[in-house]
Amino acid sequence: MEPHVAQGIVRALADFDRLGVGRQVGFERLHLYSIITHSTAIEGSTITIEENTVMFDDGVLPPGRRVHEQMMNLDLKRAYEVAAEIARARTPLSMPLLKALAALVMQNTGSSYSTINGPYDEAHGDLRLQNVSAGRGGRSYLGWEKVEASTSELLDWLNAELARIDDMSFPERYDLAFEAHFRLVTIHPWSDGNGRMARLLMNLVQFEGGVVPTYVRNESKPAYIASLRESQDKGSSDAFLAFMAREGLDILTEMVGDYAESMRADVPWAGGRGKSDDAALTPQVTPQVTPQVFTLLAALGSDELGARELRQRLSLSDAKNFREHYLVPSIELGLVEMAFPDKPRSSKQRYHLTRAGRAALARQAT
Image 1 (tube, rainbow, N blue to C red):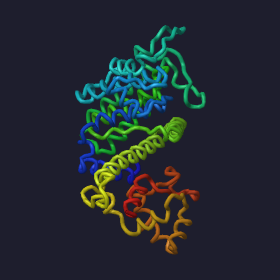
Image 2: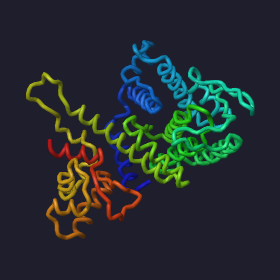
Image 3: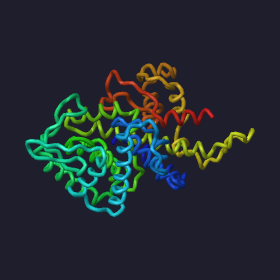
Image 4: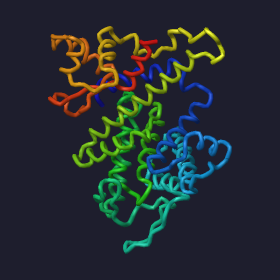
């Protein structure tokens, strides 16, 4: 994980705990509903978080939605409930357990197959007995005859890592979860449901690691798929882990910022009382931001600029001063990110605000 992203995650988790975001009544339940909704949306579901909340809590099916979508979301909810129990008990992962989770995910939407290698049923969690190509420009995944051994190796590796998870830093726990996701989806053990299962396994690791579970927002799907494709093509998970860490940081920062904003806000009929100035509600990233960093954030705004363009906009002639006191601190705080993080010294490198950067700039303006 990039150092500035790791630092940002540590700060965001500290704010999350300090402000009591996770101690709100109903937070855990509704956050799980968000995880489920975004995971199924990536697979084509159009059911909203509001519709899922009513369906999960009240049993009212959303009108105008396909039965397949409804079942996909209901099945995944049940799988997550079982995964949370597994994580709480710290039950070692096994092939039967993984297949049981897959059976829950595909319980009402899975297909059965009769192949030359034998029959198998997705609704039973069976591993595939035929080769597949899906989601990556039609290129094929691991040969079916290698799937069971590769999945067993994955579980052995993950169990060994989970045995020492309490000794890991929070960023290391997230990286472990992202790596487990990458390895499972790359093996592609099933004919369908691999994405949902990989994200479920990621969250199971996060549950067991005691960190706030993250997800991939549906609007981030193109970048998510691109990072996965790049990592699989290169045979290295680096690009995927970098994307997932930035996505996780954005989600954590947004949750903390939204909570702090809601606590500062007053009822709309409160007249001139306005918002609370309680400093305890301000995420801790703000006091660490220097005037130079705020100047850079304001200059960058909604644009994406190269270092030379940004320095010119700031009217700074000293490149060293610009880098040491403006650009590098902004990146280290997680407020600015590179367009090409894998090529930090590229002559085509450009910079833009992160969600945290936009939030910090907005707070400064109020």
